Length: 368
Image 1 (tube, rainbow, N blue to C red):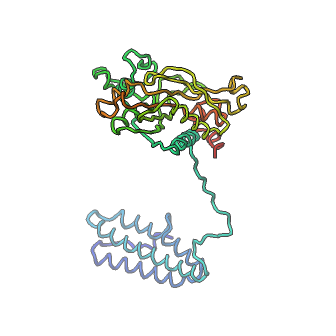
Image 2: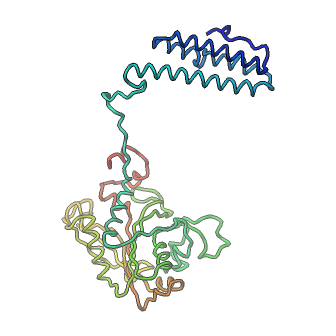
Image 3: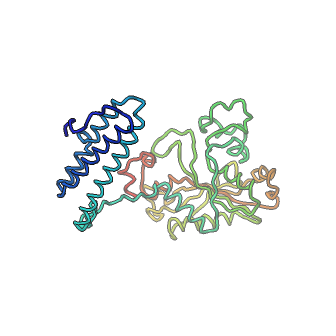
């Protein structure tokens, strides 16, 4: 549309603007009456609302951009009102056209195949962790959570780690910088296990306690096929009167059968952990060969899976300062912990732990 169709403004007072926009409105109405066909209505829309050569674009260029600053506000208001009138009128024309055709202008053609939405799934580590937690929840355990940035007290001291224990070394633990001026027990670090949640729970809740604690932990380990500086654990704690090692064995045997199948067997070997005494490593019969011996179990028929033990009285002594109910002479308990990645790698046949963290959709889609 040529610029000659847009009259020049000689004045910007209210009378001149009313006259100019009135003439444009009359011109539009006349053209709208003559646009009786669908093609005519489309031509009308392009002539007036076209982005490059439409008349509204020309009005904005000729009138608004050249108007004096004192007149731009009044002119802009009138322009917006006129533009809204044009858009509403054309929309009504198109709605009349679509009503006459018997269907909405933007109707969906239901004969066409729909766009398929991709449904997300749980990450294999989260799925495995939730399955482990579900086993213990069915046994009456509640779920405990806690911070990933911990103090030395909750991560080590309260769990009976002596000050010179190798696990406190920065070669094993990721310590927050700038903590040198603080007392050792107040220094911050990334938790190396979910055990601090056991202490926090006992401080807040008198016995009996039965909790299972899933979560992310951090250690200063070099990444390789079986190690990662970030990994996940599921730990458990049971505290009550007259809790024995037999209760621990029965609980874990039932849990392993519930998770891996009723044919799985368990066996316990003496071990050492600072926060349990006695301590044990738990092995299960190989789920791949049924205990006969294969490459997966190094032909032993058994796979080491987790650690456990009876809670050391020294741990109860630390908790007793805030929660008197944990008198080691009156109560006892057991704790256990397992690595989620190890179980997921065994369950899904994954040989490199790094695949869980690579973000490779080709790998993750296998679990859909």
